[in-house]
Image (cartoon, rainbow, N blue to C red; front, side):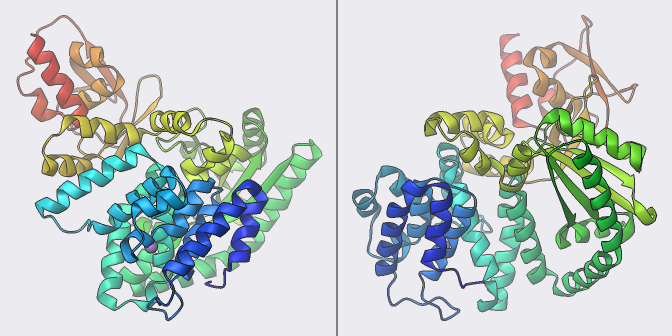
Length: 479
Ligand code: MN
């Protein structure tokens, strides 16, 4: 795994961004000189680490500044080189990125001291300023997790736990599913080694066992698409180990996990996605309530696809995920895919658009505006962002994602401030419930508005999200 060389790195950079090659090579030479003589715990020269981090970033097709910062990300913390030196040798963007990553590294997510809280806040808000800091940090963490075997067991568990609690959700928020699932599996391997090995073996058996069924479906679907001249790519995937572990600990049997086996079908445009869906349902019997249209209703991390579960060959349950090639890039690489898609846009403008697109960033910004106290801020972030979610339906069928514990009041204020302010009651699944009802997955919510008097005295304690609480306060102060 650590056989990546500077030539490999330059080759991949050349393949998508030839103008960046010179700067990347210069950053490599600079980092190599600065880390000279230092070894990692594995016994390899230190430069292997930033080189691999940068390689991961290049696989994500990141821009030149991000790549340089990836190579230099540890120099300010570990060598005499300062932020100003980086700026002089490269540019302000590279130095700001390195500085952001350095600050992130100094903070320990698992302790709760006040100084740490203040730090945490600074870092979280720096992420809002430049999204690329998280991406470098995720690449850094991914390589550290890949080489965790050289650390002592206590450190392994500590890092694995932190990865699961902080970095896996971050990868999810920006929609980088490939990084998310690799981080999850590596963490589980250190936290629950026995369970990990057991599931790994089960998974292998399932893969061998279902190989023929999936191959048959692959060729059959491919044949149908080719005969209609629909350009396509199809791949086979099984759920990651941690995903299986989580489903099993919710009481599911391995073969009841409906997305254990999946076929990923990629075509050129949206219309073709629905066309393919029809063809698949025509050929394989769908399980009715297992259909999801994330094209019309993208997830809050911008994931888009059609999901359907069908009875495949040999009566096996197989999920089909249908999406366009662009959607697939976003699903694999998350927010970073837009660096390719929006190539020609000015960087600040692009980041601003992305911040609006991804709910995570707007929530962060809002929480930052609302809470002055660091502890409140960090606590609320954990409550609202790093916690379990529920998904509910509006009467029109739109899906809204909320933290677990949210109530209809939160829904109303999420949809529109006026809706919250004029709400007098609520129907959940066609039945009247109190406004403080705690929402469950798949609830259908209809907010009732009327002229009748409602006692809103304790609404701000019944609401769960900071957003709703703030709107309620604003409303009360006007009354
Ligand atoms: Mn590092």
